[in-house]
Image 1 (tube, helix red, strand yellow):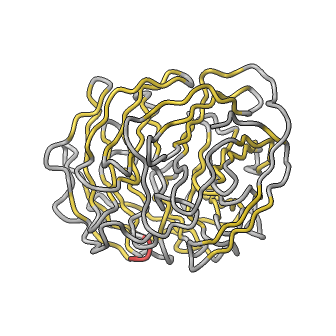
Image 2: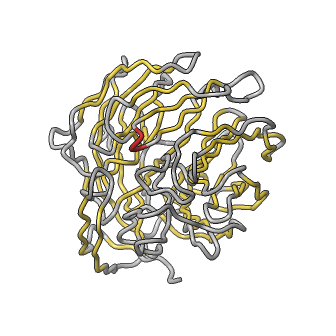
Length: 393
């Protein structure tokens, strides 16, 4: 695979047409020029991308320099296989959180959808050391979440399931009696709109939340003192159509990105109940709004069908509003899916699967986004296989 190159705000000829609420057909021709930008590497910040290769899943590591540019520093085999759900237009796992960084323990978690396993890496700057490969007690794992010393994985196949682990002495230990079914009634290899999209843990580690896309449900499992889920979930109808991405604001409220083009916020009760605070903020005018990340008082949403990023303001009371009336905070290369931001809140990185690229953005003091470059060289999604998952430190 060629080493990545960098280009400045060039264009990639692409066409991504949304089908339904979260689908698209992609045709593209990509060209990239220009040499990597210089700058001193900031070893405390890195970005990781998962290739999701069905022959040998791999994590590509990038160091971040002081100007926010990424420089490939290594490739690390997960020891598992990538995979995909059925019919995904540009995102093979049809999920958020396939690659998750655990800042508290300096660990990186990668799902291996094709082999039903989870890989654990130790993180040292932009270097990785593989520690474990663990079964996920289900098939087609697509998402992993962490809070405090609790880690949960989401399996997409069939009825869907979650299973838990505990961080113990820098490694994961399976949590006995933690596997729970979701009752989705899907195929063994589910259609991408029917598969569950993400598992999330509340910041206090008190509950597991799952989004179910076209089932239009949010399932919440309260956890006991040992981290085990309730026997069955508390189920809430989604305020907007096709709930996809799950993140939390600074006060622990759940922010849900709905693929139909809206965003909702909820207060999470100790009993697993969800109370809508700002339900289904009006359509952002974009197509396939499916991935999100919180930075300060902004939540940024990637719109795969439009090649754009939308920004929402999160008020102190949890209400949401569009930052830009047009619904467009920035444009991206073709097929934007997962996105991530560094812990210092200065830069945003967008995985553009249709172009085999990572788009780099600087985040302004007012939450505005300025494109600063693009790194190419990732595998391009081919209609069945491709990368899925990005994480930043």
